[in-house]
Amino acid sequence: MLIAAIIGLCILLGLLGFLVPTLSNRAKRGTDKGFSLGQRATSKAPGPLDSFLTKSLGKSQRATSKSHSAGKKSRFKLPF
Image 1 (cartoon, one colour):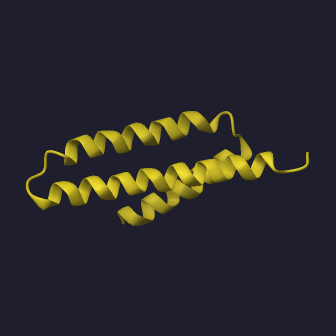
Image 2 (cartoon, rainbow, N blue to C red; image 1 turned 60 degrees about the vertical axis):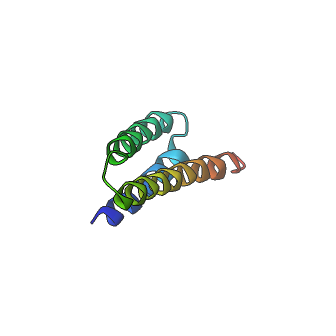
């Protein structure tokens, strides 16, 4: 379920980056805040669970950032 939510968030940020690139920055900052809060909370988990959860949230944040920047890049490559 969580994986589907991350994929949906990536698609949403990619579309926002393509359709309204300047206004999509606020949505990206909001997701970055959410992921960083999650990383801080999971860094207090015991044992190897700490690194596993922190890494997974970091990779999710990286994926959303990549889709957002890809949407913005493709928008600015258009001829109009």
